[in-house]
Length: 94
Image (cartoon, rainbow, N blue to C red; front, side, top):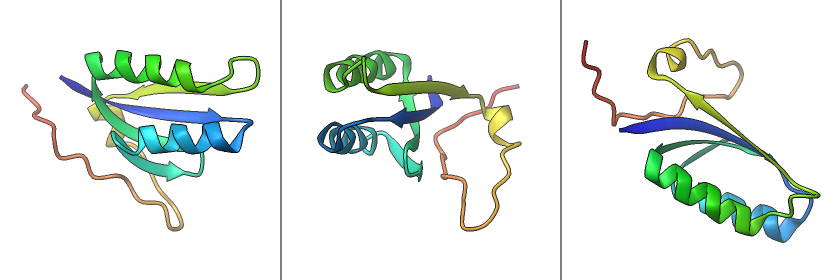
C-alpha cells in the first residue's frame, strides 16, 4: 500500500539541494520550494530515506517526513496559486 508523504527540507549546499529535488521529483511533485508531496510504498520509503542519507550532510541539512493519510488530505485547504497534487492511486475500502 502506498502512502502520501510530505517531505520538507533545508539543505545548505546548492549541489545537494539539486540532487535531493531531482530524487524526490521521481516520486511526486514539488508543492513548495523546499517541500514535495510524494507517494511511496513502505519499501520505497525506506529506499528513498537511505538515498537521502547518502546525499545530505547531517551536520548542516534538515529533512522532515510527514505522512498524510487519505482522510487528512481531504482537509487540506489551499490559497493563492497553491493546488493539491492529484493522487488517483487510492482505493478506499470501508
